[in-house]
Length: 77
Image 1 (cartoon, helix red, strand yellow):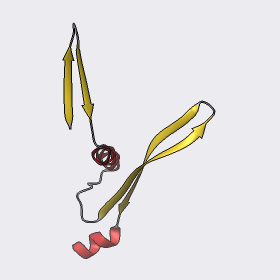
Image 2: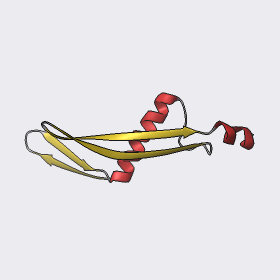
Image 3: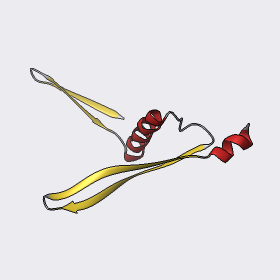
Image 4: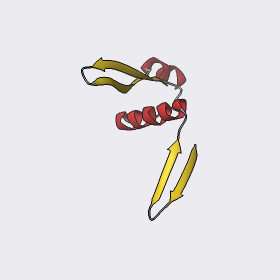
């Protein structure tokens, strides 16, 4: 991640985050709400950007799918 700061009577900070890193951050937040860890061998995820056309333009969303494989937990134990 690169962060740039511009000072002119105020501080303006700009960060650019690569898409795969941003999607991982969002997936981690969703996993945290679910009480699971993306680092668990029994957990896998997909995160991707979706778009749809509306009457006022396009809307972009991130869709996150988290799979907590209970069978894998039993096998690992």
